[in-house]
Image 1 (cartoon, rainbow, N blue to C red):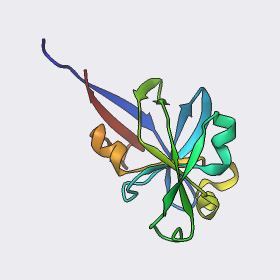
Image 2 (image 1 turned 90 degrees about the vertical axis):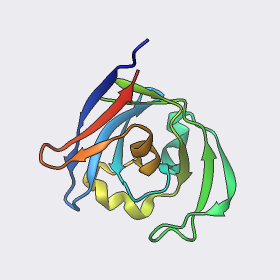
Image 3 (image 1 turned 30 degrees about the horizontal axis):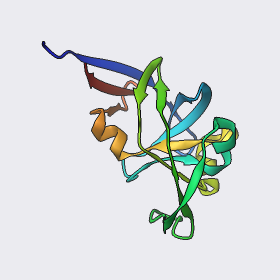
Length: 139
């Protein structure tokens, strides 16, 4: 049986702060996520967990990124994320208070970010010329 590579194209917007933001869905709820290739984890803001019906258990660790060293990380399970109508199963996420990055989303704010594990797993590429995130999945 031969595997087939399928590419999904997800349009992103450039925020006034220069961040790339994609629309996604988790548990049927629309979200705005920053594309963050430097982040060691994908993150959901603690403020949106109840709305997403996601339970959290606190970790013994604190975040280590810019401006986050005092923020406790939460362990969460996300069964799937939808981007441009395509569902990706069991993405790895943690929870974190993201009040300090809300300015990146402008008036609409943000619900989290997609970090480097997602980009690596799906061989995702940011195309700045076309304002797209290109995700490659082998099926």
